[in-house]
Image (cartoon, rainbow, N blue to C red; front, side, top):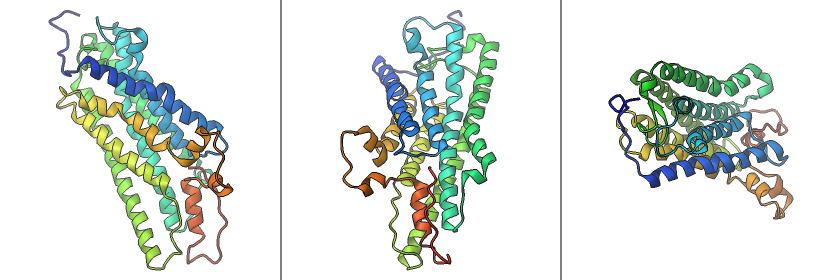
Length: 322
C-alpha cells in the first residue's frame, strides 16, 4: 500500500489509551467471563437461562477478536499483514450485531417471563422449542452475516484495510458497510430499550397492585431483572456512543467505553449472591435459606404466582432457570 493511498488516521489515541483498551478487553475475555461461564455451566448451585450463557460467549468473542493484534505482536509499529488485519476487522465489524442482538434476546427472555407471570400464565422453554432455538441462534446469525459482508468488501478493496485508521484495531473503510451495520444495531438497541421500558411498566404496575391489596405482600427479590435492566441501559448507552463515533470518530473515548462493556458484564452479573457463594467456597452459608435463596427470576416469580387472587388454589413453585 502506498503512502498516498493509505487510509487517513481518524482516531487520535495515545499509547496509554491503547493499553487501557487492550486490558479492558483481555482481562474479561481471558479471565473474568470464563470464570463466570464455568460457574454457570458446572455449578449445581447456579442456574441461568441459555440466553445468559450466550451473552457471556458473545463478550468473550469480542475480547478475543480485539486481542488478535496482541497475539501477533502487531499492536504498534508497521502495519499488520492484510490477512490478519482483514480477519480482525471482519470479526470486530460483527461485534455490534453480535452484542446488541445477544443483549436484546436476554432482555426479551426476561420480558416474556415477567409478562407471563403478570397475567397469570405459564411460559416454559419446553413449550416453545422453536422460539428458544431462534433466540440462541439469532446473535450468531447476525454476527456471521456482518463478518461475511466485511470480509467480502475488504477482500475486494485491500487498499482500504488498515490498523492506523482506527488506531486501536484494524478496520475497513466503507461508508455503505458502516452505515448498514449502524442502522441494524440502532434498530436492535431501540427494540431493547422498548422492552426494558415495557418491563419496568409491568413491574411498577405489579408493585402498585400489591400496595392496593390486590396482591399479597411483595416479597420477591428482583435482583436479577434489575441487574439485566441496568446492564441493558448501559449497553444501549455504550453502543449508541460507539455508533455515533462513526460520524465523529476522532475521539478515542467511544472505543474505550464500548471496551468497558465486558467489565460491566462481570461486575453486574458476577456479583450475584449465588455466584459469589461459589467463588467464596471457603465460607459456609449462614443458613439453609441463604444457601438456596438466589435471584433466579423464574423461581422468584413462581413464588409470586402463588399469590394470584384469581387462582382457585396456590400453584406449587416450578423452578425454571433464567
